[in-house]
Image (cartoon, rainbow, N blue to C red; front, side, top):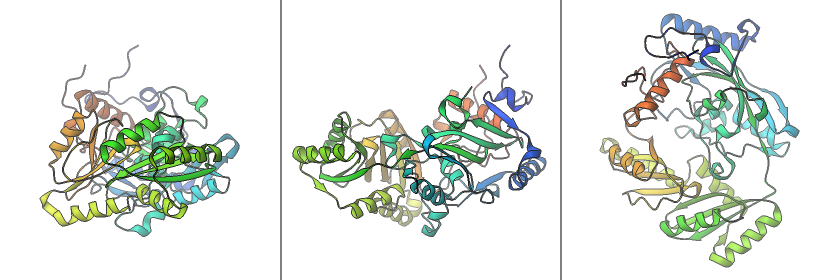
Amino acid sequence: MSEPTLGASAPLPDSASVLPGAVPLAPESQPAPVADLLERVRDAARRGAVLRLRGGSSKDHLGDTRQGEPLDTRGWQGISRYEPSELFVTARAGTPLVELEAALAARGQYLPFDPPRLALEAPEQASAATVGGMVAAGLSGPGRVSRGAVRDHVLGCTLLNGRAEVLQLGGSVMKNVAGFDLSRLMAGSWGTLGCLLDVTLKVMPQPVVSATMRFELGEAEALAQVNRWAGQALPLDASAWWDGLLVLRLRGARAAVASAVQGLYRERKGELLAPPVAEQFWQGLRDQRDEFFVRARQAVAQAGAQGVSLWRLSVPATTAPLALPGEQLSEWFGAQRWLCTPLPAAAVHEAAARAGGHAQVVCSATVQPLVNEALASPVMRRLHHQVQRAFDPQGVFDTGRLWPRGTPPTDPQP
């Protein structure tokens, strides 16, 4: 029996046949806040309207957020299940991130991927960031390089899709995940596939000891050195380089961190930062409030239509310095490069592609989707639109924030 083809003229099969691994839940058994969200989706589908998910609004500056009627998830809050001994927690999508982290910290645990709190336009909104927005954005902070990304910690979720169906995806432990692991697809989907209702996340014990060292190194030397260290048995947790300084965070058992600090000092000297100074630095880097990001946003604002933009480039960690004009900061042992430059978009994309990676604009005077669809391969475009149609055939959540809204694939079906 052949699989259904989701072409432009294909009929709409039910979700169970299109999304293997998704378990439909009875809509009539849902609590009142979820029932309200269900009715909003049904109404939008009837009217041909588009809904734009909203939590704490801390990431409204990312992507094109001009389209769609707001659908607020903050009425569905709370931690519904927490098993510290099993290292997982289930939280509703509207739960404030700070509330979840406080509950984990009380049991000596944390979210190791360092979820950012952005809210750059209104810093007071940083504490309003929600669990659903954290997963939908799929953004990770400095610890991602050693602990994994958001998607690596998503065990399962409940989703309200564009068909007004409530689907259970994944489970609470890895061995419970059957079929396609659709829950991880939600990380980085930016709310374009449906409305997350709750998510189950893998958590980890907080590190016993943390230490931060700083070294004076040029970019090329810093990239080579940090990758050599990353290949050794050292408890490296995060890295950052900017303006001639390489900063390393080490985390783990007390003896392992102490031994590593002594060894790195013997090899490269360097400076051990006081814990309050180190914590302030890593938080600023995580939340994009560090001096580099402040200066980058100022440059974008001052340039206006002249075209200065802040870019995030994902490249192989061992990539040599990109030698592009503008300010650069690198993280994740060199795998993530931030670039503030007046270069046109085509030149930045070309440089990233030459290095074997890709680029995404983060801050620009021009409002645009997060993904430049013209640069995606025909296969990628077709795959995106087929997935979109499987979850949301009527485009209820197709706001254009991630990809240009309603653009059909241009290549023929295989």
